[in-house]
Image 1 (tube, one colour):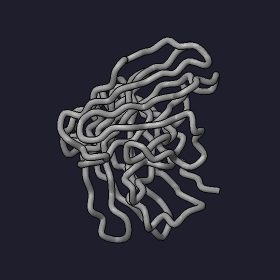
Image 2 (cartoon, rainbow over the protein chains, first blue to last red):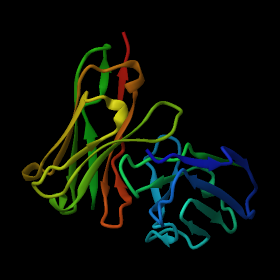
Image 3 (spheres, rainbow over the protein chains, first blue to last red):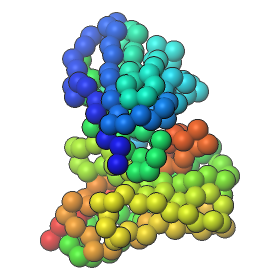
Image 4 (cartoon, rainbow over the protein chains, first blue to last red):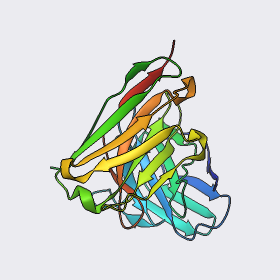
Length: 106
Length: 119
């Protein structure tokens, strides 16, 4: 199975900050990497797919990059609605594994 | 409006069985690979199972399930199912159904149904 490791596990930031979350795969996954945002009690929401493509309706302050084993999710200027938990997920092969999550706190 | 609505969760004793359902509306259900993803309370996301689009019914499961779960679909009823047998305490989780797109991402999710395995 492909292991996905996110860092940091939690992150404190302020409105207006630029933040970056990293995700590392245990083997090359090309660009088969997705990012999700989840708020308490809600289903995950797709933000970025194939490493860098913004899902329709997602604000442009979110961006993704990377290929192979190393990926990043960047939020250019944090807004109050962005405080949530973020997960990376590989879709290179089943089982479709997720990272352990990064909790972004105020 | 697209919807995925899960049901069937609840409290079950260890060793028991439960069948989850997910009813889709607002999109062409038959054309999508459908999946189950679970989330234990306070923990991260774990992919559980997938079933291919159409009538081919190719299935995949997480190794951790050890053959206890079976995924199926009824395209005529726009429904996805997860039969869960020999349930254990560590199966306690919110179970989400999610559709997989051609770009291999989960772009739409249900609201989830809670399964609690406890004596």
